[in-house]
Length: 163
Length: 100
Image 1 (cartoon, each protein chain N blue to C red):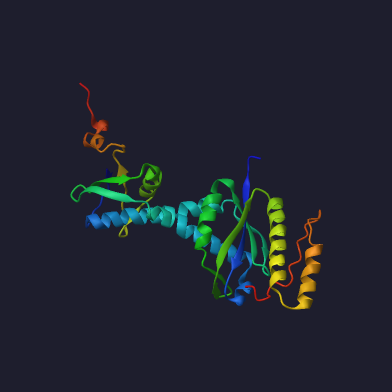
Image 2: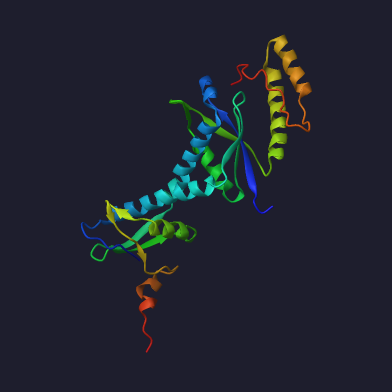
């Protein structure tokens, strides 16, 4: 395909639990573009903004999927560590973005995300103390899979004190 | 060499360097501003200077200087007279060379 894009999967990590309500596509998009503008100037900002959008967002897990052109994904990835806060509705919370995966299609990122979430659930399973939570996690682990319609793995039990 | 036509106060060496770095910062961000640029010579009378930069940074430097339009709210322009990998080549301007 002549018009290739890269999809960057990252997660928003924050010490403040109220940051989760700030995770929305406009706020994240603005924060990332602001960081690109600071780090790479007008040229980098224009280069990366050509085909830049926030494709997918999950506020519960803090997962964000960004899309950009293949020619400028390195500018985008190098500017992601400079995102320091998310701002929305006149509230700003400090956070940082962790890059999980860079893929050429949404499908590869989705596959990676399902495996990653499965591993996170396993880690939560090891660390949880309550028997009932254990059963809930095991049930969602057994039910997550990649079906033909875009289904996501079970994302319950995320605030078990692991953050 | 760079030349900037101006009407009023002339920048000093430090201000000139600051101008170059801020042009880089505007067009290429912090990455551009971190590009190591050296001012080798500077003549305040003619406002021309010889700058040194890594060869991989020439495109960034040249484009940033081309797009710089203002110095202290006055219009200005950078003109590149010569660019060469060897310092000795800058001593003679081959554009004004007359063959007899």
